[in-house]
Length: 470
Image 1 (cartoon, one colour):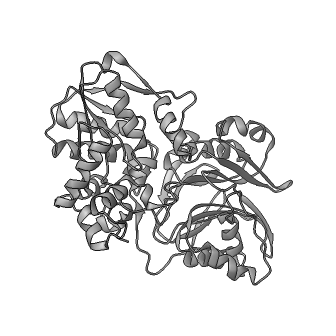
Image 2 (tube, rainbow, N blue to C red):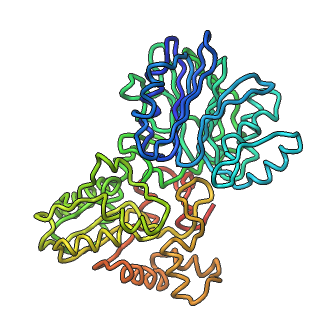
Image 3 (cartoon, helix red, strand yellow):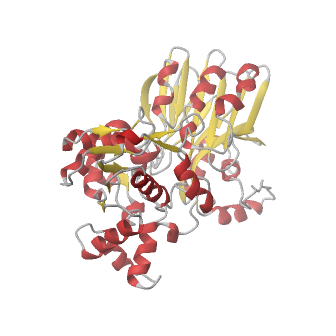
C-alpha cells in the first residue's frame, strides 16, 4: 500500500510536508521520500528506507535543511518515490498510489521512443517512474495525467510537483481517496484526511473519481473530469487500512468500524465473558460489538508499540509464524478462565489469528470465538497492492475450497456459492477454516451487513476481493 501528502504554501512548506507525510506511516513500511521546489534553490529530493526506523527519525535532517514553497511526500510499501524527472515539460516530481497490471505492455510501448527505466530489486520497473514516463508522452501535464489515468489497468492516484504548483489526479474509479485541505496561505492534498488536521487545515473537499486539479498556495482549479466516471472506492480502506481519525467520502473510519461490530453482534448469539479486539484495527470493531451485545470489552492483548508501530508482517512465512506471537503481549489476569469473542479486521492467510487464538488458550482462556469484521477474502486484489501474496492460493479461503472440492480447477459458479453466506458450501468452508485455525467457533461478517456499515451506495464500493465482482 502507500500514501502521500502534497502542500503549496506562501511561506516555507517543509514543516507541514514533514508531518503530513509522517501521518501516513501506517500505510507503508519500506520507503519514504520528500521532494520540494524553492523559487531560489530549485528542486530537491530525499528518499530513505524506513524498514527499521520510523519516518521522523530518517528525515530529521531534511526537515531542518530542505526549503521550498511546494512539496510532495510519500510513504510506500514497495517502490522508492517521489521520482524526479527532467523532460520537455521541464523538471517535475511524481508520487503515486495504485497498482499497474499492464506495466509490461506500457513499458514496451514507451521503449519504442528510446526511454529508459529504473528496475527495482524485485526485477520490476518502478511503477512511479512508469507513470512519469506516461505523463511525458503528452504535450502538457493535464493531457499527460489524463493519459496515465486512462491507459493504466488497475488503479492510479497521483501528485505531480512543478514550478507552477501541484497537480493532483484521482483514480478514474476513485479506488483511493484524495482529500483537499486549506488554511490561510496554504492548500494541501492528501490520502488521509486526518493528516492535515493538526497542521491547522480545514477540509475543503475530496476529489471526484477521475478528477484532475492543480493548486498553489491560494487557489485550486479543476482541470479535467471524465465523462463516465464510476465510483468504486476500496471498502477495505474502512475495514483495515484507514487511520481511525480519517474519513473517506464523508464516512468516518472509526464510526464505520463501530457499525461493523454492531452488525456482527446483531447476528450472533454466542455466550462469552468478554469481547477482545486484536490491535489495532480490530479494536473499534470490538467496541461496537461489545456495546451492541452487552458483553464487556476488555484488553487482554496489548501490542508492543515501541517497536511494532505497524501491523504489517514480514514476507517470509517462517518469520510470520514467530512474529505473530512476538508483537502481542498478554495480560494473564484478563485471560485466565475467560470465554471470549475475538474480533480482528480480517483473515487473509490465517497465520496471525491462529497464533493469537492458540496464544490465548495457552494463557488460560476457556473459549475463543472469532468474528472477523469482513467476509472471507476469496480473490487477490486487482486494484491495490493489498498484500504481497503472489497467488490466491495463499488465501486460506481458497486453499480450503481446493481441499473441499478436491481440485484447483474450481469454476466461477462454484466459487460464487462459496461467497454466499446462506449456502451449504459456504458453511462447510467456514467450519473447515475454524477447525484448521483452532477456534472454538467462527462467524464472518456478511457482505451485505458490511456494506450497510459503510453507509454509502453499494454500487460505489469495490468488493472484488470478497465476491469477485468488478
